Image (tube, rainbow over all chains, first blue to last red; front, side, top):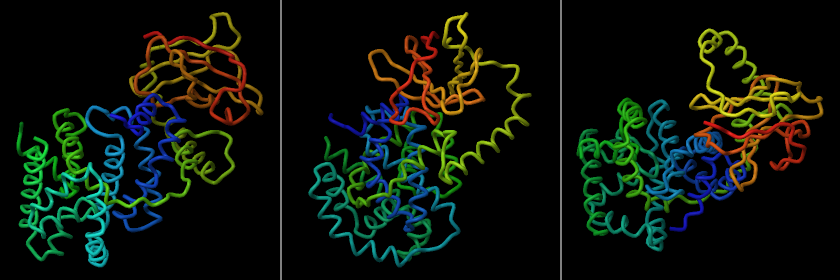
Length: 180
Length: 209
């Protein structure tokens, strides 16, 4: 499959600095979008972006094109770094931002539907109970913790954990069904 | 297939594992190929959500990123100054802490750059993680010039590995391949400006493993 980002990552693994520069040009706007949405602070997102590319360069040899697309891998590096930073913050809830993000969901969803790659997961999200689907999105896209989500949905923490674990299992079953 | 691990991998990718569990899982993940596959599967399943992240043009942080990864001696900006400070601190720390630990174990030589009787010679070592280049004969160039190390795959363009200063150059490298060439060129101070060698090759040799 044609995957120019994967090619650039493979060249980065061979210490090709020109490829690294091209990778920055091709992916930094997307990764900045990920970090801004999760960290909700521009200065921190810019710091984190530098760390993300440092990690990408140092870990590029772990990228395996057989296991997934280059952009998926790069976004995973950014998301995990943002989650590590969020979890290291003092505990606080971010209700205002969460409300704001919930409002954007329909628009985001229609954009999603236009993208073939994303269609399966949208179909599968539609099979979930809406509150659980919203909690899963809040966790993945905004990096909300169980505590944030339990607070937001006004359920005990363990209930939230059960929701999300069942939600993940249902998504997995659904996607395997769609692919089969 | 361990269903519990698959569930935890899902929570890890989702980002909801409580901090202590997350750290424990990340530690297991480093050396467990089965978990790595489970995580990659979840990353792939949930990747459709990535379309919801809006793009947001980033400022050009690339020079700062390069300065972090590839410190150069000639830098005027404060990042360079800060980098220099950090390097100096690391060298100082290294001087205090490392010699007793590292002195007895010299990593194997993988390439000799320059003929045995040449005035300027370098040796490349590899310790499984870093490639280390040290000058074993000859002198550093004049202050207006730098020695720059390049790695060259067969039929490919040279790729810079950095500048050789007073201390041996140490650069993280995944796995050097036999038959590839290491070469040192003479460049303007600070290195070849475009990332393409401009000066003469002063020493070169093939990697043998």
